[in-house]
Image (tube, rainbow over all chains, first blue to last red; front, side, top):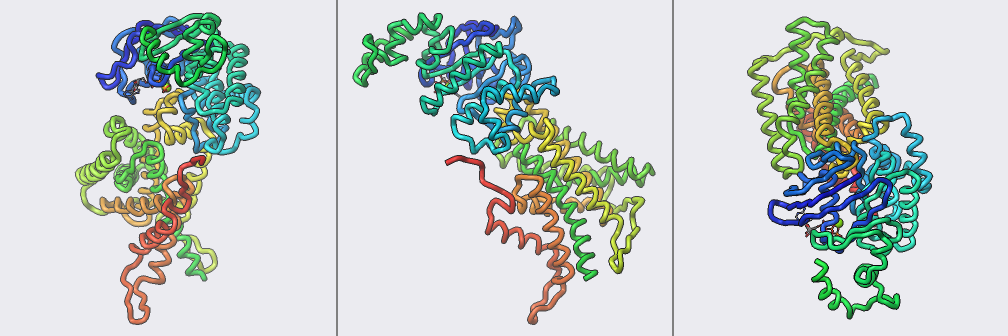
Length: 264
Length: 299
Ligand SMILES: Nc1ncnc2c1ncn2[C@@H]1O[C@H](COP(=O)(O)OP(=O)(O)OP(=O)(O)O)[C@@H](O)[C@H]1O
Ligand SMILES: [Mg+2]
C-alpha cells in the first residue's frame, strides 16, 4: 500500500535526516516505526505527507509510492485526498474551534458530504466523550481527550491509511492503554492501515503486526512484531526488560550506548 | 428626542460602513495573518468601479453594484496571488509594508484611471427620505444599515455553519495542520482576500452614497482599523460592534461636542478625534479589545 524505498532527505540542504530508509505498510496492517528522540520518525512521515516546503525539507533520493502511484512531489492536500491522513505529533487540534467543528474540518477532503452525519456517528462510537463535548471549545479538553479528538478528526475522513505520530506522548499509562485499544479496534473494524510512530515500544509492539526500528536516520532492525518482542536487544533497549523481566537500572545505560554502536 | 433618534440612525449607518471595512480587515487578518493597511483604498476602488458602471456607462444601479462586488472579489484574489502568496509566514513588518505600498499603488492607479475629481453616484434611493413622525431618515442610511445587517448574518452563518467557513477559521488558527486535513491553504487565503475586498467594495459604495466618490475617501480605512481593534480583531461580532460604536460616538460628538463651550474652553471639530480617544481608553482597560480573548490555553 505505502512503499518507501531508499528515502534520503535533508533539512536546509545540509542536515541529512534520513539516510536511505525503506519501509512498507501493507493494507489493513498496523506497522510500528520505533526510535528514540531525533531518530527521524517525524521526518519520515512529514516527507510522506508532503510537508516539505514549510520545513525546508527536500528529498534527495528514493521514492514514496501509495497504491502504486508515486507521491514524491505531491502537495499535502493532494496526499490527503488519496486517503493518507496524519495524526500529528502533539495532537495539534484546533483549540479555538469546537469539538464538532474539528470533526467538520477533518472531513474536509471527503467528496461525499451527505454521509458526514453517519461518519461522525461512527467516530462517536469509538470516542463517546466527543459526543458529550461536541459544542465545547477543543482547547479545553484534557490531553487524552485531545488525542482522541485528533484520531477522530483523521478517522472521519474515512482514510485508507492513518499515520499516528507518538499518540502516547504525555499521557498517563491508563489513558494510553485505552487509546491503543481503540486504535486496534479501528484497524480491525474500519479496514484501515495504520503506521504507528512511537517511542513507547512496549505499547506499540503490543498492537502492531510488523515493526521497524529507526536510529539516526537508518532502519537498523525490522520484522514481524512477535520476532521483535523476542529479540534480545529490543527487550533490553526498547522494552526495558532484562532476561528475568525486571526493569533495567540507570547503570546499564552506558552499556546500552556501547551496544548501540553496532546497531547503527 | 427626535434629534437623538436621527443621530442614532445616522451614526449606525456610518458605523455600518466602518463595520463592513473592519469585517474585511479582520477576515484577512484572521485568515492570513496580514494586517491590511489598504482596506480603505480597496473600498475607494470599489466605489469608483461602481461609479464607472452606474454613472459613466449608465447601467442600472443594482447591476453596477453587483459588477463592482464581482470586480472587487477578483481584485482581492489577484492581490493575494501577486503579492501575498509567497509572503505566508514571513515577518509581520514585511507584510505590513507591502500592504502600505499596495495602498499607495492603488491610490495612484485610481488617480490615473479616474482622475482627481470628486464624483457622485446617483442611486435610485439618493435624496429620498422617509419621515416617521418628526424624524427624517434618508433611504440611503436605511439601506446601508439593512444591507450591512444582512451581510453580517450571512457571514455569521458562513463561518459557523459552512464547510468552507469552518475551514477558513481552522486555517487561520493553524495553517500547517489545516494542510494536513486536506485543506488547500493557498485557496483559503485567496478566498479570504476575495471576500475581504468584496465587503470593502460594499462599504466604499455605501460611503459614496453618504458623501462622494474621490481618492481621499480611502482615509476611512484608518477608522475601520480602529473599529476592528476596538472589537478585538478576532470575530465578526467584534468588527460589527466596534464599527457601530465608532459611528455612534462620532455622531454624538459631532452633534453635542463640536463647537461647544465648556467653562470658557472651546471645542473644535472633535468628531474625528472622539472615536480614537474612546479606542485608546478601551484598549487601556481591555488590551485585547471588547471581545478579544487571549489564546485558549489550558494551564
Ligand atoms: N525543521 C528542521 N530543520 C532542521 N533539522 C530538523 C528539523 N526537524 C528535525 N530536524 C532534525 O532531523 C532529525 C530527525 O528529527 P525528527 O523530528 O524526525 O525526530 P523524531 O524521531 O521524530 O524524534 P522525536 O521522537 O523527538 O519526535 C533530528 O536530528 C532533528 O534535529
Ligand atoms: Mg517526532
